[in-house]
Image 1 (cartoon, rainbow, N blue to C red):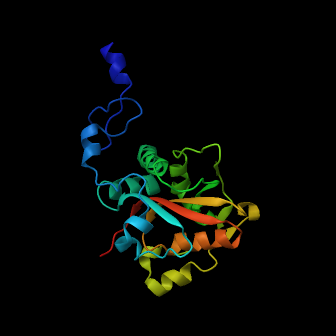
Image 2: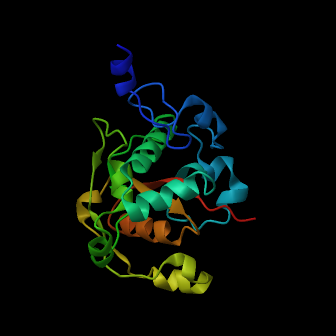
Image 3: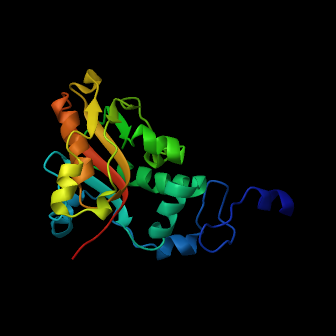
Length: 222
């Protein structure tokens, strides 16, 4: 019986100790050490000192799990560049829990932030789509790929403020199936907001009624 019990436990992603059951990827102790935003928090309304540094004029609400810090600064690159599915699963579950407690209206479409086909070919997958696999799709919402990346852009972290804005011009295209829909964009990290805001603006231009943004982490600047 002891063997069977252990078989249905996972190893904690941080300390390698046994978790409570086979659905958990963190032990209780490590989970309690995480510095997280309160469940359901909308950054635009509850943390204006942070959101004021983000470009968000096309975005109605922003939800994030944590700041870009340990251990997310370890998990996100693991997911983004090394297809680490357990890191994606854990962060997707945490993001899902955050969204389940939000006061946002009903979401019609859930969209992973698209990456360009050239980058998709190089990497083999879209990390935002991995996160979406672990976000519950209610009876009212469905996963959509109506938004596409049409421009191969430089990483935003390599550019200054003016270059970032120029970099995102005409970077996205969208089908008209979003008309009259409330959309949730899902991404891994928010840095300046230029990318997400450009994507949200394209969705609004295509007829979406509102665009919300959910990301695992945000790079916090003083």
